[in-house]
Image (tube, one colour):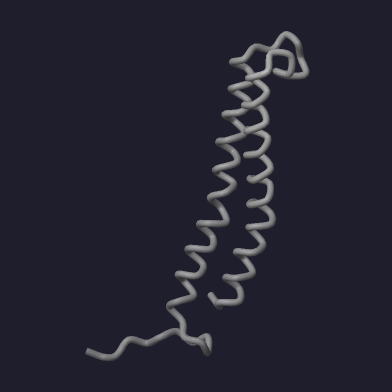
Length: 96
């Protein structure tokens, strides 16, 4: 894999997965703060604190999973691009 392709894949996944993950994590934080105020727990007055905490936990889990995708894509794509030299040819080990 070329280094420019690795960089493009990392930037693309950062925008497509990284930004939504940050938004989900912020929504999880807002849901956690909503449980501390009795009147602002949720839109539905019948919901309990446990329901809101479950929703916040789901936001956190999905947000962290989405945040892992750009990190892993960047790590593995740049690691694969290190096996090639700057001309784009694979490095041939010396004969033993």
